[in-house]
Length: 302
Length: 304
Image (cartoon, rainbow over all chains, first blue to last red; front, top):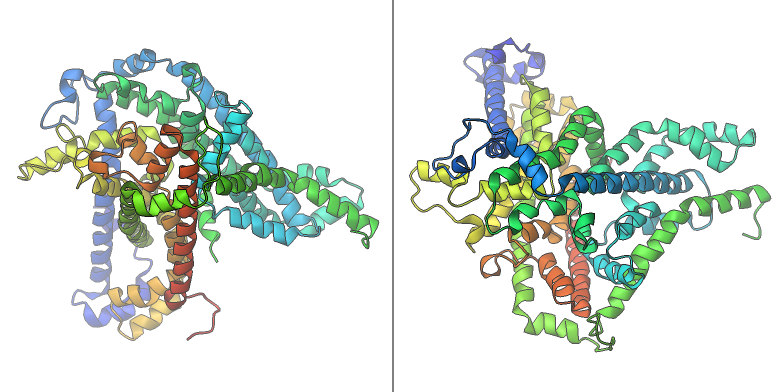
């Protein structure tokens, strides 16, 4: 059993109290709690993985097995061909190119504009800075729905509906949350670095580009990953603004299998898996940035 | 800027230039639209006909004549009431468990973090299939353990919302990471002192862990309620076409607003809904902050 191989490194802390109550001694009680924790974690972990396994299982089924009752978990034969069929039934290659370009454009815009604004708020002094920063923080409290309707009216007035412009252009105007996140990081960079460069006659833009950006790779990576993921998985925006089928993103395109008279679950699950794949790959490659970003998310408190 | 030295003036100009993208964005995409939306909420704006000032009519209609407004508000309230506290509990539970020295911690962390990463239409469609009344694994299991007529989930007005809450629990699992960071910041000597006094683990949890983590829990409650008040995209996808499910059971506030705005083009009416939502969100947050004084404990704050 793997449970028993674990060294009891926390034993000194718990032994004092355990000695008095546990008949089996401190070791046994510690082991007891750990086993319970392990079993609970395994159960919760299983519940979390369960939909994903069901998805994979369905994606590999023949249509006759999809509706089996009780459900079949390991299809026989495994229909790998479903992935190809799902992909070719709708123009998914086109959707993938659209989504990728859209996500990259948003990532570039967010990083550029947010890191510029963050530098201004973190390192430069100007009248009204703190008041403006308070306004920035306040905008995070505005529900997206309040601006959704007037923004749509604005974009339709200037004839941007039906293009990618409403989805991409706003990201070049520094959203509040990521500006705040990058600013927090910039504040931790010692002022001496930029002062020294300033004495040497460097422009602020040069300092931002050559000192600040290189020093903040981890936070920039975090922002990039979250922004990419956000764009890749966004649905309402593309649904609202893209009315031409050739412009659809993957998320909108996925609905293809449901508009048919009957849902082809095996293809729908296969296509969904393929759509999720880039995010899963990015997650496994850059896990620590995800974790960092989420922890930073919590650090916003207070 | 008159009294400033050349250097400071240059710094100020640079400062404004650097924040210019945000400032423009704020004016163009937030402040401007908000002012327009506030104005529109007092008009009969419907895109096609001329905008006409109608005063408080939209608000009156919403509050006194539109039962679906109250239905959608109730649905959103139900969702917030169940999903937010349960999310906190799930995240906290996972964090506490992972804080024990158990084998396979890294594997567990990866598994629990996955729901945080995976969202979007694909996941929602997956849940639709998992909750499928006839062929989904959940009902197969329920039949297996002897429940003859398991819920129809998204097709059943009573069970559609609980199904969405269950879905949100899955997503909440990824929230453990914040609690874990906060857990690990609790000084160990607090527990040692409690153990010498003979405090049981459960007592320690309620008397040390929860108070020490209260700022994190509070943060998650605030952001959780905010997200829950705006929850509706899942309902748009699950009740295909966003009809609001059987007997309007999944007509959430945002979904109803979406229908009014982009289904019926009643932009003025929907704008009024948006502003009511803003007022509700700010009020709920304000109440939470007041309530927080009773239970949120900040380190360094004088003990009561």
